[in-house]
Image 1 (spheres, rainbow, N blue to C red):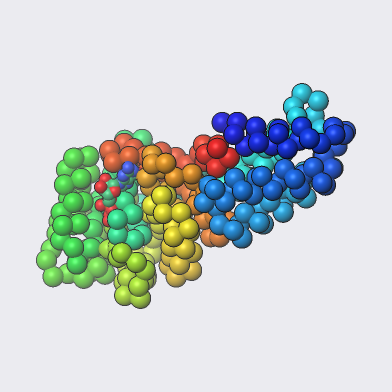
Image 2 (tube, rainbow, N blue to C red):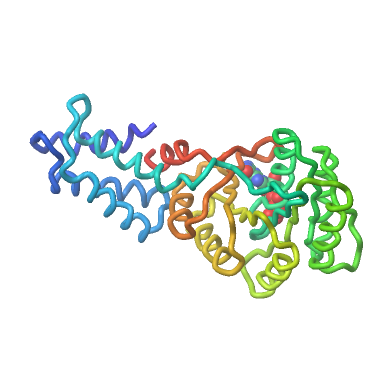
Length: 297
Ligand code: GDP
C-alpha cells in the first residue's frame, strides 16, 4: 500500500547507524521525504507542515521495533497519524435523519457532481436504510438540471417534487417540506443550484434556503480531482453556510487524495462519502485507510 514511500525511507535509513530509538535527526531526515510525498499528493503546504511537525514530536524517541526498519516505522507512524486526521467522529457515513421528514441540503459548485450525488445518496438511503425519500431540485436557472434530477429519480425509483415553473428556490424548499410531511417521507433532499465559482448571489440563495429548511445535514459535494481548489471551496462553504459533512466525488479518477486531508484539517468537518463513478451505486462510505494509502503512494 505504501511501498514507494517506504522504499524511499528505507534508503534514507540505510545510511544511518541503527540505534535503539529514533533520534531527532533520523526522524527529521525521514520526514523530509514524507513532506514531499504529502505535497505530491496535493496536500496544502500549511497542512503538510503542521502534520509533519505533529508526527515529528510523536516519532522522536520512540523505540525502534526489531521486526521493521526505522524507515518503515516512521511510515507506520505517519500512516496512523493520517488515519487519525482523516477519520471524523462517530460512525463513518452516518447521517442525522431521525426526525421525519429530515431535510438534507446538498450544496456545491456546478459540475462537482451534486445532482448525481443527490440521487446516489437517495438510492442508498432507500435501499440500505429503507427510507422513503423525496428529492427536489432548486436550480431554477437551469431547467435541464431540474429535468436531470427527475430522470434520475425515475431511474432509481425515488420520488421527485413536481417542477412548478416560476417558483424561487425558497418557495420550492417550502413546498418540498410540506409535501414531505404530508406524504409521509422520512427524508427530503434539496439539490441547490451550483455556480461555476463561488459568488455572493449563490451564497445568499443557499443561506435563504438553509434558513427555511433548517437542514439536519448540509452536505458539500466537491470534486476530489480539483485539489487545492476543492479545499478552498470547502472552506468558503463552511464559513458561510456551515456544512455538516463533505462528499468527495471522482475518487475513481487518479487524484492522490491529498485534498481530503487538507479539507479535514481546514474545516474540521467529516468526509462522509466518496463518489467512485457515474453509476447510481458508485457511492461508498468514506474509508480513511484507503485515502491514507493513496496519499502515501
Ligand atoms: P452538478 O452540476 O454538480 O449537479 O454535477 P452533475 O451531478 O451533473 O455531474 C457532472 C458530471 O460528473 C456527470 O457527468 C456525472 O456523471 C459525473 N460524476 C458525478 N460524480 C462522479 C464520480 O464520482 N465519478 C465520476 N467519474 N463521475 C462523476
